[in-house]
Image (cartoon, rainbow, N blue to C red; front, side, top):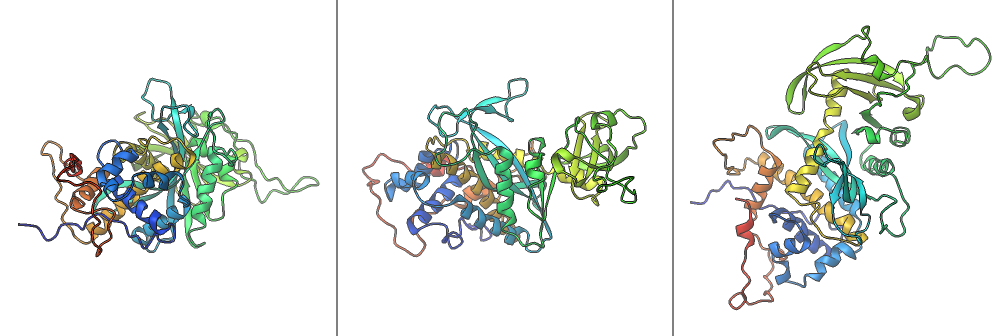
Length: 454
């Protein structure tokens, strides 16, 4: 007996994206996004086309041209997805937490645009942190989903292709920019999408904790990052100090010891904090003070937090935040959200194949991974909408592996199950076009239902 409370099939509201594409490109975009979610295994463009049987309705070259030659702006699509996420997850909010990081998609080939040997943060431990491929600077929205999971999800909605100067094939007509400069572009893009009453708190790693991001950031943006242990810090100037002679008042106070030295001081006052880090309760020792990191933040006074794990499970860290009124617990918790983008990078590569497309030209290399990132966001939005409606997802729980929370793999499996009988490339209410091949004579078999994860 069929159940009446099953979730609606995964789909994309094409009305939201009508201003981003022409009519043919919009159809190809909907097919690619839906096929990217339904496809299991390697997510090459050809595999996505075969999964949704797009080649039965039109020539497959049209979908390849959509990525390589069609005129559409990824930032406009990112804007729509970001606004939909705000409307669905944050209908009324005063601040947003964003996370920025970069990831390397490993590829092999000399003619791939932007490919070269470069740093690979996801390389196995013990080996060289170097890989060959293309690098993307990603920005995502950190969200919590009450009732679904206690984990912080990072929804990547925009990205920029970065290429080293040693790459053999470089993008044409584009000036070289560093990773922090690309990150600043993404921050400025997001800042332009929200009103001045919303504060953006951007969490970055040590690679983006520099003057390019901190000094040149737009108004209403706070950067939370890491301080070098050998950084030169100064105490804030005393406003009550009267200048001894001529000239302007001092903008910096006395020079402070380096953070690496402060960890070994016996006079440092440590506060024990019971805090949740990376999904579990942890006890850490923290010491907070205000200082000026002139090389990075200029004369701006920053809140500096020294963090030490008594159990030595985590290495010592030094964090900074422009919000001097924030407590050490808030700053540490805020910085711990950065780990969510690492999980997102892993899931988009393993489950959605963001590094699988075999593209070489500039547009295709830049656009293909965005299909995986946008699919990640749309799957989460679809699941949240169905979860709030009280739909039954029929999760299969293994008795030897009881799950307490719903993961993204569960959301993706539910989206695939919900779309088992959906037709592609045909609008609802219209007649289905006859396929090119006669199924009775053709040896083609519809294998995508068998490949879908049940």
